[in-house]
Length: 256
Image (cartoon, rainbow, N blue to C red; front, side):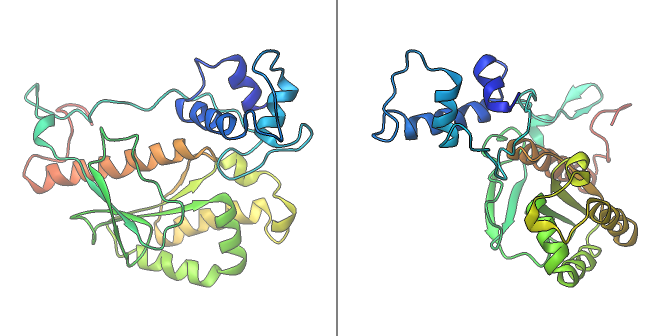
């Protein structure tokens, strides 16, 4: 069963961002001359034609790859809680402003993570794709979708490793991969025949060992990857802010 059919049967459980994408697709193509259907009797094969274009066509893209089953809970809506002596000081802690590299394509805007992120600005970064205002020399996050990662390792390997070497200048650094480890280890499309899953996964392990850059495996479902990036960036900022203001590198006494 694929994610679209599942969402049609379980609309309440479907991820809200995913549900919105389905509705956008329906609104865009519903009742057009190419597809004059009535909502009554809207069977799966007809709905599949709305979403896919053709009933037999296999839908595949970077945002909602198929086969893929999204059943994640919505992200948190509250602030990251900080306490001292049993009392919350959360309101005293600012939220970070994220700096996005001007060359970043299809960026994370973090618009659904206002509880963690104050806003975003564009800036040409020395390395990586994302950092935090005030931490430009301390923190960097490189982001790679699976197609981008494969293309980079095949065609721009040396340049990518030079970028990784630049990232070692930062105290906190990471490579966020928009794919699970299972995705990385699975066979690739025909356009990436030069890349073998074992070689790619091995390269990522070697990259982490040589440059000390943690590899964060996330999801090919973009909102989940964006949530992970928002959480990673905001938590690093919060710990840094607490430490730099003499409040200790801890969120709550006796805990993290």
